[in-house]
Length: 178
Image (cartoon, rainbow, N blue to C red):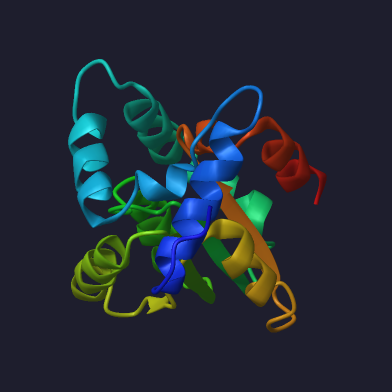
């Protein structure tokens, strides 16, 4: 079954066929997090029942110094790459801390939603005028592949929230295996 015409429809048809032909059946989460899906997830994160956001924010608020020491010795620069950055509300705590310590770093949020990346970039440019931000829109694996050999600075990956739930088991194993 091939969709003709636009390449994105062909990819979608291929992904649906592959997922629904598998055991267990699955659909790629990349189709849930378009611009509207990202907006809906931001609303879910505000619900009292959704605790991961508050828990991570608590960790970042209370342990920013320890996280800072783990990332750098105070002189090294690094690239902070966040997978599924969304609105960046949690990461803003770390960014503010790192900027206050005059740590040279680049923030590279990765999100499947262009709209989410645009909103994050605009918000962070206003909130953190000294922040060097390089957003990337696309699939984590594709974008990480392109960033892998970019520059010689240490790369720190933030993989927060329930992102792992968006992966099939085999993809999750491959991700954590390197």
